[in-house]
Length: 265
Length: 339
Image (cartoon, rainbow over all chains, first blue to last red):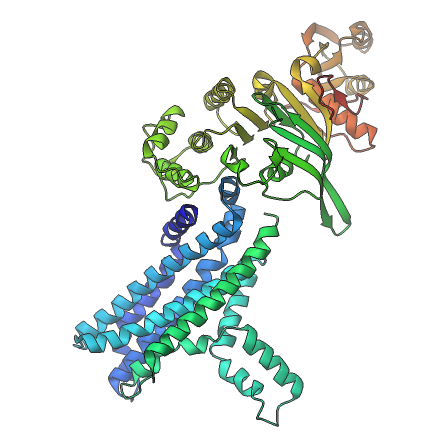
């Protein structure tokens, strides 16, 4: 456990100093700060637009950070030969991989916490929303985003055990899009009650639905954007989602370890 | 007492577009405990691949590899060994001391004083709190040596430990390695710095294209001597003629140096030089160096297998260096190196 935590700590230290990540983070934070000025562009209710906009910025920025952060985790260690010194110590490969993943998740959490704090500050200072209920309602959405991004990071770590960073960027990005933006589309294709779908397309859509994690489930921002909307049985829904994410993360890490264990580095 | 390192018919092949490439080919090594063992070979000979197999970082295609009596890669063995890679890289945001603490934590060691003691031992006591990014190459190499001592290893693998260092750093690192032997540690060095290897190693193995072409104690392998004939005003045709046989020949602006085994008659060269209008400068007998052994073993192996002879060491500034030797393909001493 000591080895895993040490590797995680070092990974965190490196990640929070990577300029490319800091630039992405800075852009995200800047958008959050100027977001109140952009709401005038929309005729919809100001607060609704601002909430949707800021949460959208956090989600998009976090997704880019999660992918950019993790696609280089293993390849960088191999290229710089740091992995040889580490693996020549009493460290097993699974410990190395899990340590790298945890370090990336810690770094992701730190960066998301910074963006969330900025968002809450924007609402408190510029919109005068200082009640714990209002801010708490907003803050729980990025928490679910964090779980979502941890899952996305596990996808990227899995791919990083056998593909190059560039390929991984597109693969992980593709998986995220299929599991979130296009999830409804695949759901419709896989629906057995629809007779107008080609059986082959339906079978393919079903396979994709089973394999690709459903990132859409973690998008709980609607209840925060539209105060009238509530999630029925929110606690059990949240626990279920976290369990779902942990299950997928475990599967992805185990698969990554099995590949990495036999890989020539 | 078991051997520190033993390989038996170790083979590592990689699939390429043109078929299979044997990077390590039936390699048999025996390293005794407590010795400094030099592992030599030209670039691409398979040295680093062999070390990676011994460390369990990559896996052999066939054959066996044992480290401290256990199969290579055994995690318990990793507690008793250490590795300094060629051109090591460290997380640049960390200081020398933080790097040491990080590697110590991988062994479960939390003793900061132990880390400091080791940094002091490699003369980094005053720089331990500076970021690694500010360290010179020699300082980074010394951090590498310090981290390799964290677990008080029985066996150290050092890959090019003096590569690219200035003369002072060279001497410091060489002295440290000698200290390791005095402490009873086994040191396995892969290096191109033949003068260093000759000074500190007890035994060596020279590999070429993945195969051992010479192995044994230096005192046994370096028996015999060489004669160096130097002449001025020599034409290029003469240098070409001299390349026949067992000679290493260099020609630079008419200055010809012929390096030959001491069982050959230097008068033949002297006569040839005088007939070609050249002037003899010196005829100096000298002892055989590791460089000579390396050239004999590697080029002899290449010739025996019909490969192009490599151009090699010590040729700085010469118009031409060639070794026309037809040395035996394998050289072994009789100290039981052949399992």
